Image (cartoon, rainbow, N blue to C red; front, side, top):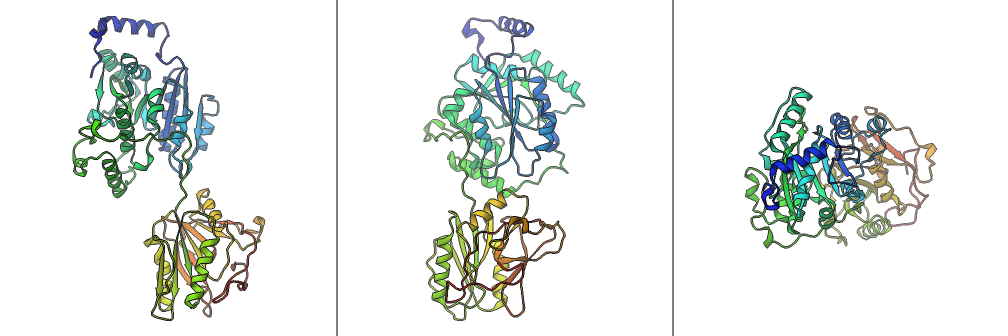
Amino acid sequence: MPYDAEADAVSPERLAGRYSYLEREGLLPLPAKDGVTIVVELTHREWAEECLSRLLVHSGPAVRLIGVAMREDFQLQPLLERFSAEAELSFLPYERGNYRINEALADARTSFIVLLEDRVLVTAGWLNELLWPAIDDPATGAMAPRSAAEEQEGREVLRFGNDLELSAYVNHQLSRRRGEWREAGVLSGPCLVVTREMLQRTGGLDFSLRERRFIIADWCLRARQLGTRLAISAASYVHVLQPLAARAPHKNSEAQAAAGLAYCAKWRIPDERLREHGLPVPENLSALERQPAIPLGKTPAALPLVTAVVYFEEKWPAEASIQRQLLLQGQQSYGNIRWISVRDSWTDTTPDFPVHERDTVITVQGEKPWLHALENISGMYQSEVTVYMSASVSYDSEYVARIVKALLHSPAALIVSAAPGLAESELPDNPERGTAVVLPLERTAHRGDILPGRIVKRESSRRSLLLCPGPELAVGYIAGGPVPGAAVPGSTDRPSERKGGTQP
C-alpha cells in the first residue's frame, strides 16, 4: 500500500522538499550510511559487461558489487580483465553443486543488499527510491522496482529506442511518483533489495526449487511468515533486456513444470493454480507451518550421484560374481554410488545379489544382449556421472572419487583414468573434437547428460571392451592410482592381463 504521509503529520510536499534538498546537497543515497552490497547473477555473457558498467556509474560511491557466475560455461576472464581496476567489484566463479548466491549474501555486511540479474539496465538514481520503504515502515524488508519482469506489475514490456529515451521515461516517472510505494503479496522479479535484518532472519535462497521466479517467491513468503512486509516502488523503474525469440535459450518445459510443482507442494498450493495469471501464493499464509531458514554461506555440496556400471566380461560362477561385486562396492570410498551390475549368465537363474534399494542387477544370456544392455544404461539411469568398471580389474579405493573430481573440474565430456602407476607426464594429449579415438571402457567415465558412443569388443577372441565416443565429445585424461592386483572369475587375487597402453 502507499506510504501514508498524513499519519506522520508530514505533507507530501514537505517530504518532496526534504528529498530535493538532500539530493541537491549530495547527501544521497540515504539511508544506507554503511553502503549497499549488490550481488549480480551472471548468466548472459553478452549483457553482463553493460550491466556491471551501469551499476558502477549509477549506484553511488558507497557500493560494493559481487558478480556470481551462474553457469558452468559462463566465461569470467573477459570481465576480470575489463574490470581489473575496480577495487569494489569482485567475482565468484561457478562451482557445481554449490549455490554461490547464498555465499555472496553471507559476505554482505551492509544494511541493504541488492540481488539483481545481469539483464537489468539501471539509470541514474535507480537505487535511492528503493531504500525509502524500509525507512517509512521498519517492518518492510524487501523492495522491488517496477520492471517488465516483475509479475506484480503485469509484465508490461516497454521499448526504448536509445538510452536517452529510457532516461527520459525514468525521470518522468520519478517526478510524478517520487516517494510512492505499495505493499505486495509476493515478489519474483530480476531486481530485489532486502535489509540486512530480513536476510539474517529469513536466511538464504532455496535453490532446490530450481526456477528463479519460484526461488525468489519462496524467499519472500518465508520473510512474510516472520512478519516482514514486501513493497514495490512506484517511482523506481529498471529496464530488463529480453532475448529475441529466435535467440532465446530453449527452456526445459519438464524442468519448469517440476519446479512449479515443487513450489506448490512446499506452500500447499493446488497445482492447478499454476495455470492462473501471475505467481500463485497461499491463500492463508499465517495458517501454514513456518518454513525453516536456509543457511547462508557456502553450501555444503551434496555428493553428485554416480552410476557405477560393473560388467562381467566372462561367464562368472554365481558365487564368485557375488563376492566380486561386494569387494568392488566395499573398496570405494566415494559415498553416493548407485551400482548397476551387468552379467551374461549361463543359467536361467539370477544370483541373489545383496543390493541396496536403488542398485540393479541386469542378467542376460548371450553376447549381443550383454553389449546392448551396456550401451543403453546411460539412457536408462540418470545421474551426474557414469563410471564403467570391469569385474576383472582391481581399482584403488579413491578411483571413483578421483574420476568425479576430474569431471567436475574439467570441460571434457569423458574422462579416462590412465593405467595404474602411469605418471602424469606420460598421459596422452587430449584429442580434439572430431578426432577418431577408442577408449578402454574399464577406465572410462562420462557426464550423465550425454550419450557416450558405441561399445565394441577390443579383440574378437576376448570380451574386453572399448568405447568409441562421438566426434563432438571432448576427452580428458587423468593419472592412474597406485598399482593394484586384479581379479579373474572365481578368484580375487590373480593379476589381470595387460596389453599395450590401453589395458589397465
